Structures are given as C-alpha cells and as structure tokens.
Length: 101
Image (cartoon, rainbow, N blue to C red; front, side, top):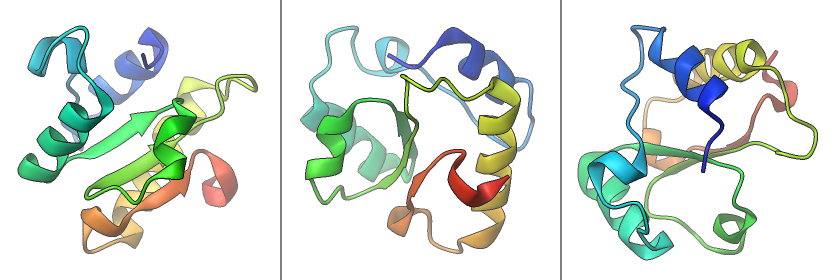
C-alpha cells in the first residue's frame, strides 16, 4: 500500500488523478487485478511492491523504495517530470524520485 503522505501530495496536485486500489478495486486486490484495471483504464501504478519489477506490466509503473522513504514532495515532483517526458503512459517504468529531481 502506498503511504498516505504520497497519496495526499499527489491528490493535491490537480495534474494527476489519484485513486487507491482499495477504493477502485478491492482492499485485497491481487497484483493481476491491479494490472488489468490499470491497463484497461490507461493508468500508471505507483508502488513500493517489488513483485512488479519481475514482470513486464501492461501499464505504466512507478516504483519507489519504501526503505529509503523519499519525501512526498520529491515523489510528486519526479512524477510531474516523468509525466512530461512520456507521450505514452503505458511504456513508463521508472524509479521515483530516481534522477527525476
């Protein structure tokens, strides 16, 4: 589950639509269900779940390292830059904040 501080920071930015898996799909949604929903709706998944890194997702993917806990502002700013850099959100596979800040 994405930290609430990241959800708040991204929700406050009117450039992005933010939704929680538990609200859109189910609190116990599987990775496959999340991937299918994201692909169907052309959404990018923000996660700290490294299971996604072993797959070739059919949707955009932004991964953050929960252990190093980047600040919510750094994550938000990186996502803004990533959003501007890609025309097709389905090909996004990036670490945030990574080199994006």
